[in-house]
Length: 374
Image (cartoon, rainbow, N blue to C red; front, side):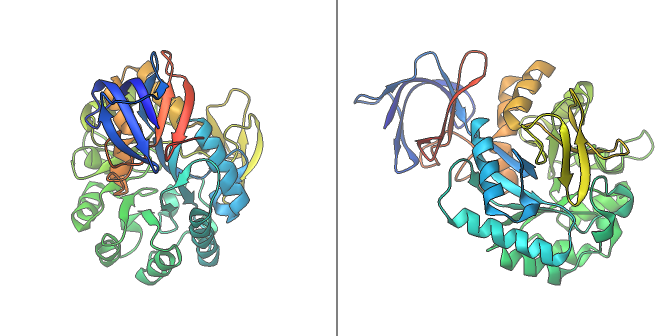
């Protein structure tokens, strides 16, 4: 199949005109190509969005350990141009986490509609009680290499991210061990700047939903926020729904992070796409209020988002982030953050033909996953 007369963003995220040939789910050639194909004149083609931190949507939730729920998520995500995702667990008992990673592994290996599972994200359970947010306090615990190894093995080596609070347990050996298998992220943490710096030196290279559930930056204590912003080794997740982080703070964060370090995530829960109502998240009741930007616990604590990456991409443009930075933060940067950028994240020869076709208003017209119309 050849897409003809394309306006697309190439592997350097510069606008280019030409044709794109797809064969066996991969991009075979890019250029002015012979042969007939589908005319894409007047359309904008971008790489598929990648969501590395998503709990659920459309009624499905990764923590249910239910393949039908994962398929609901995959189908809903594809509608919004998300071609790859990492189902994300909550802080739960070890047996439940084992069930979750085994279910995701099985789901990935089977044929299904919609977005592709590209990995597993373990958000916890090795976090700080004081920064647990919407995580269930009953299951917060210190990290052990044994538990990590067991989950990693049972996942079929699919765990691509794990969030920890390095100050909440003796984490140095844990980080030094886990970093050889996955990307270790700081989050749900009360670490001060020195503790954060030490964790980065030990191997942490990622920050979970920057600004949320972590020590803030102040003028005499950088906290986690200031420390990770200041260190180019750390990629930083950002929830860009306009509620978790105000647009002014987002603009400042992007000025520091530039075009290569921001990772846009949804952090959405099962209620995303379903409107207002009461839902369950990690064994707790959460609520989506009328016109709410996110889900909340009964006491009003922010629980999770109800957004999606396409909506956040458009938000970033509206907030004043330049197109190239916004696009990279929703595609190639997430891919790099889980070491999958050789396969997905940009329009390049040899990569998966995961493409989103937009109109002039940046609304989605078509989504292709491995070259097939989703």
